[in-house]
Amino acid sequence: MMKTKGLFLRICRVAVFLPVVLLLLTFLSGGMKAYAESGSPEGVSGEKRVYDEAGLFSREETEALESRIQALRKEMNMDVVITTTDLAGGKTAGEYAEDFYIRGAFGVGKDYSGVLFLIDMDNREIYILPVGKMNRFLTDKRWNSILDAAYEEVSGQNYVACAGSFLDGVAKYYKAGIPGGQYNYDKETGKISVYRSIRWYEAALAALIGLIAAAVACGGVTSRYSMKKERGGARNSLMAYRANCQFRYSDQYDHLVNKTVTFMIIPRNQGNGGNGGGGFSSGGRSTTHTSSGHTMGGGGRKF
View 1 (spheres, rainbow, N blue to C red):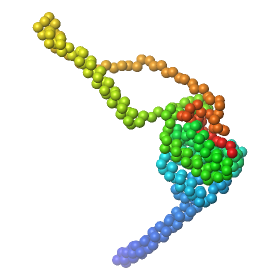
View 2: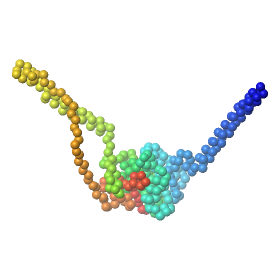
View 3: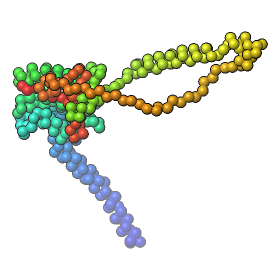
View 4: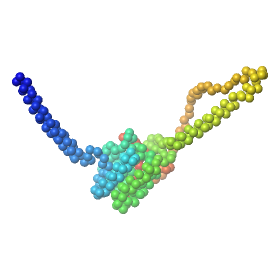
């Protein structure tokens, strides 16, 4: 009886103190989480996309750029990064931009799609780095056009307007879509990757035309070989066996025996358009190369 009473008292004490212990644990875990978030310069979300290491923007300007970038990222489902530096560490603007993008683990999807804009005060150069799918939108001609507008602003030391001009260009060309005949040209291997797309109304029109053509052809063949006149005139003649003749379709299979593929090499354009950017042979060309699994293009402009 005494043992049962003692056990009952211990259970009561546990029942009283258990809520207090749980409350303390909840408070401690919440405090640790808040500390971890405050200790991270980017917070838990890690959505920071403006890295003003050269101190060219004010706090308000940085916040405004961040707001525009977040809206663009949501619309395009691709990454957008702006960075500045006054110490490139001996790297060219292109090398610094590529290293920054890779080390920052930027990009969306398996091809790390996105674009980075660099204002390099060390090399005195602005640089645009399209990556992955963004190369389809920002062809050589297009990113050179963006650099033209950004160059006017950076030459006047209006750095926030320079970055804003870059964002304007990205938004403009994304809304314009991928230009017809666009292709990526790998300057290291010579490989060409042509972008092909069929819009829904083009597919529907092609299917409709195919159905009409097939119906006309089948109708003509069936009418020609149905032999209605022969059946009517041959019932009382020696050709009576033709009276019941009918045309019927049968399965027929075609087997591919051999094929011939022809390749055409497009020569490089030796006349470069824009400093450090590489030339373009048409409005749809994007000159690219591969680095650490990233397909990168773009180029820069000295100021």
